[in-house]
Image (cartoon, rainbow, N blue to C red; front, side, top):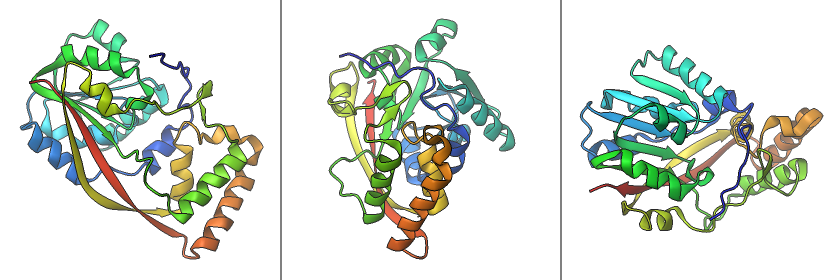
Length: 266
């Protein structure tokens, strides 16, 4: 399978929005992984494609050492800031790819998390590389709530429509455009050396304001604020006006279904 090269500026300029506006993962996810992998404060964890580290830091009490890897320097700088402010001291942050990390460090991990990032990766190669890095009895947790069959809510349809109007019909991603992989994550795992398990966690409610909808959009690769150029204020005013027509309170809700795809090394 050909892997698209999105370039090194895929998330350039998004880190502050990412840290502030990306929805937090529910406590049920942390409890599930703690129970599933019998986490007890020992061993190492790797968060691959860690972003600004909100999920990484949630596991600081459950491992001796944690490594967070991301290709975007701004993401790692923000992760360092957050972990310093919250006094989390057992996480090493690394800018780069898995290949370059393993060339310099020889470690194994009880758990590897990949949260909303697997679709950007050379998935087959990443799993092959991780199989050598995961301890027996450990595994990889691929976390996502991508659900193309779920009908968008009215306010979500309006946001999508306005994004296409102001950003263009093609979904930009770094130096090219994005198309979601045709093979599912589950299929990729089933064809690897790992054993596949799929778990659906209880749905949880996410509340949005107009500010957080905008901030979350600006945290994405396709919604990068720099793509708007001089049209930022016009776009924001347009979005605000249209969303207030749908709900004058400016508060919007959605139910998020979270799935965890496990790649287990028995």
